[in-house]
Length: 83
Image 1 (cartoon, rainbow, N blue to C red):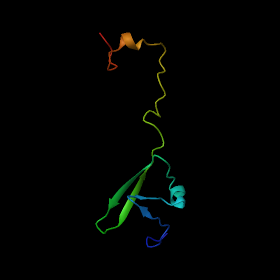
Image 2: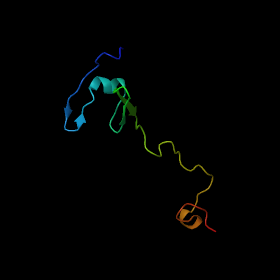
Image 3: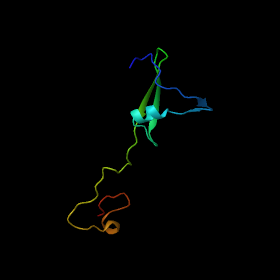
Image 4: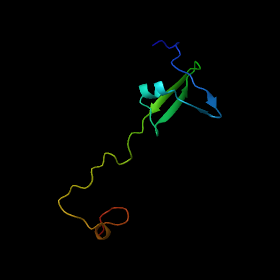
């Protein structure tokens, strides 16, 4: 694909612009994703897609210890062992 070619275009309405469906599909852009905008010295606009595919604790599998804990009595408000 040539950098001089036009893939798609969209119209600005107020301070918003739509991302054409073909580009959203090709770049796998979905609700919640962010776009980072960069203006290069040449005046070229570059957009980086930051995909937000999961929540903060999505990789957390939970406690797998061998015994149950009594959080209220064994830890203070910050999760530190109480003395």
